Length: 106
Image (cartoon, rainbow, N blue to C red; front, top):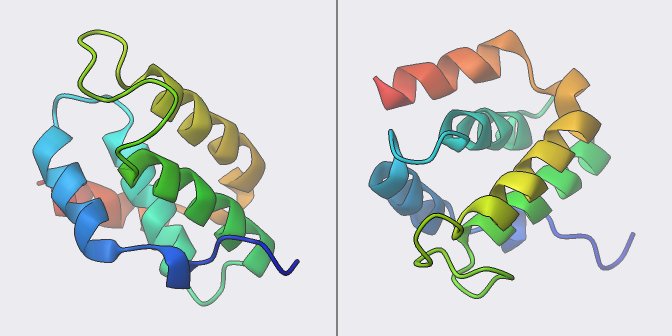
């Protein structure tokens, strides 16, 4: 899979900046964080990592289908992408990843 998005394409600083900015305001932020921890886990298969990286890049990217600054709608597309990838990668998002996300948000 030559064109797959990987963790190398992902900017951790941008991700955590956005997470901090929208924690408590956007309901899927804990899921995005759990996905991040699954992505950086060496035990997660590369296909799941690629799907997760793609979803998280979309979340971080300011130029997406519905700009995040649109009140009430800005994160609908991001939520759909995150939810779709959770369905695909859920078997690789462990309770430990969810605990790490919860700890980060505390």
